[in-house]
Amino acid sequence: MKVGAVIITMGNRPEELRALIDSVAKQDGEKVAVVVVGNGSPVPDVPEGVRTVELPENLGIPGGRNVGIEAFGPGGGDVDILLFLDDDGLLARQDTAELCRAAFAADPELGIISFRIADPETGETQRRHVPRLRASDPMRSSRVTTFLGGANAVRTKVLGEVGGLPDEFFYAHEETDLAWRALDAGWMIDYRSDMVLYHPTTAPSRHAVYHRMVARNRVWLARRNLPVPLVPVYLGVWLLLTLARRPSGPALKAWFGGFKEGWATPCGPRRPMRWRTVWRLTRLGRPPVI
Image (cartoon, rainbow, N blue to C red):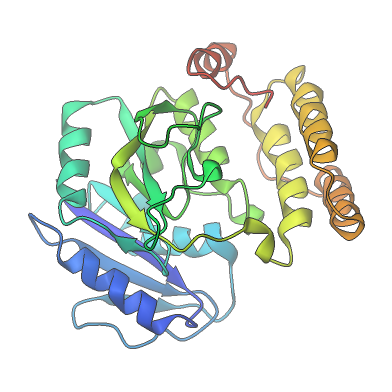
């Protein structure tokens, strides 16, 4: 199975980007083709053979990754598997690409693999990086209902069938949107603890737009994908969870601003999942109300 890798960069981490590319080049088996997308910025120097695309403006995370997908042909169809990797990450093992090939070959229903993210210094995996509700044991692999955007592998047949990431989201929840569409089409998602991307421990709130976009995109996610009766339940649960976390005044103001924006602005095409997909998500441990 042919494997490609998509990396988006703002051009501000040239050393980390080079280290990541080197870790991809060291993968066992057939060479992994790499495309680096400069998301509104020039691409730093990269090794010979690495393709680059420089965008005149920042299209956001999903928009930049979609450009990377199309660099491998329509829907990424020139390869069988695409890796999506954060530019400040590093593949911890040399057999990750081979593990992906073996996993997809062994399971025809498997559409997406979420890697384990670990801090390179401590080896710690943050709870938020385990894409399931029961996240206390990051070393346990399992079926899941979503995946990590900057550390994953996608069978390109999934992208050809259900489309890419939602450009409109710009940042936050774009992975869950794709995951729900893939699950509704009959594909499965695995979290694999043995496929590791080293990444420094960070807080998502470091991004200035975090609270607004998390809230806005949460509303868009529900409006696009959920059956009508579940939309208020899902958003009501997340409103209560947000309040329970006691965010600061400015953070809460930004969150409610984003929540309002999510209702007032277009969210893209609505394709509500089937009720049997709701049941599948529930059986997998995460009903689409949380």
